Length: 224
Image (cartoon, rainbow, N blue to C red; front, top):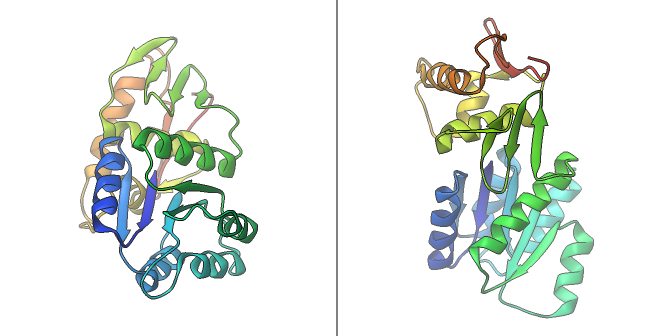
């Protein structure tokens, strides 16, 4: 999952980045409203954590602009203020949740999972396809009830594919969402990780759950 943090308090931003990266998230961060709006409107994120009080453009104006542009990315507002009017205003503008500071990382992560699940239409914390079950909270993957050992990056790759079975992701899209960095277009890191994930989730006597679309990329095949 790719998350944008727009927070001017660098200590809080660093704390949140560290906590999210430890859980396998791809994270971008900025510390002023103008940069935050540019990133939020120009990049694809699964969730935005948006401070209300920011230098330059404030958080509510960023939220308003995104919604006017029909950008439906889930937004969680962060603020040290506790006033009801501000919370109501933000929610009425289209915020998906509201978290007052200070907060615990466990609560923030739970809220990120909840808003992303609602946005994707998922009703459960576990994604099931075929004999594979992927738990978004415990970050466990099971095949026929048996726990599989996946690295954080392997889990993120499988999660992205399983969230949209049948959808074809190009190598560039997979790099952007799972690795989140500038890359050499000729790198074979995606192919390497696809082979690793296949080796762990595929049953010996069945075809692969991850299909190759030659010349394009990969997709998850729910029926195997």
